[in-house]
Image (cartoon, rainbow, N blue to C red; front, side, top):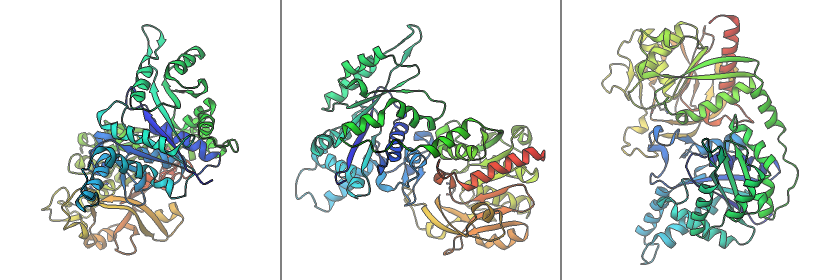
Length: 540
Ligand code: GLN
């Protein structure tokens, strides 16, 4: 095939309708039919990337192999498609403007007045076609963040309009995702918000080709006909997206509704084979028929917002299915944990995960939680800041270095067991300057890490400025805390673990970013297995 085809996904009526899941589900179906498919997300905010955002704003910041800090929807794309994404898969208004302004400073616009149309829209269109032009994909799905009608979405909507026109008939189509609300008092589903949202899209010159309607109740034939008539789409192009018990059900629901077929028809592409979802459905079956149940405590400080730890929660879903285990993740706010209430707050948990994070708030509670897990043989898994807390806890309570801390929290500590990385010391800018993306780690033989990975070299994704201070390595190892994974080039400690404990491991990197339905992450899989085993043995 020579022409890359483009599908644009816009959203109407409200935000949070799950455009990312619809885009990922459609991509999954097209991929399962044999099309090389990728997804990209364009976000209308002015931050150059979400790396500087507090998780309360848009949830977790997802990190790619090439070190891009991106929107969490890229995590869904990877989890569904099992294909890595990159910097090119996420573009923000800030990034677009930054590159246009840099071009202007270099004099590339040859004295012209630089304007939203055509300069910003051209930049957006170029970026929309970047992955398509690589020749690696047959179909590129582009999700436009925000809601149609927002002031900040306008340049994107205009770019989609131009691009669909430029690409020509059957080469670019628009899917509009809307809400069909149910009015309980009237006992009715309402189509008016959808009609208005389609009208808003039309005012920008875009005619939706397919409508995906989010709903809590079945949309009747009559209503589907009404939506088709008033929104100017074919009857078969009105797709119902009813609430599902898990996001992993959505590809099957979209298959039943024929979303992939309608899209292929509009793009003038053959259906090819029926989608091969065998492995996907095996996963779903295991997910829905668990044989065991465990409760895991997620110790963090952004627990009020589920999206803050999105990839961790999804990794537990994958690992749970692998172990035929229902994993209940119980959020535990680290700010409210202390030595006095810890056993009560962690009661009934089969293991704890101490979450990544930044800054001082809630860290003493995290350290208490590590101590409790270590002393009570409770399976423990620490990620990034969670691993750093485990090092501090061991230094304080086993080595007796009472003041041990990270210089992130206390610059004047007498025992900086976690310290700023050397290469970070001259960095002042906050955006995009952490140690990011995939770095190598060598795993020592005869360790828990080696048993888990069954490999001696791994590549995992990072996002941090602080590290295990090598000056304390010998002392901590002599006391029993082993460094079982190390970066081969810098010696940076990547994994720590304890012997004589059912499961105690901390990693400086973020394994959660690499867990997918097709490849559940071995650390999560083994952690869940350890909790099941520990629970069964009655050790806990
Ligand atoms: N704040 C810590 C650091 O920068 C940990 C970061 C994280 O958990 N992602 O090293």
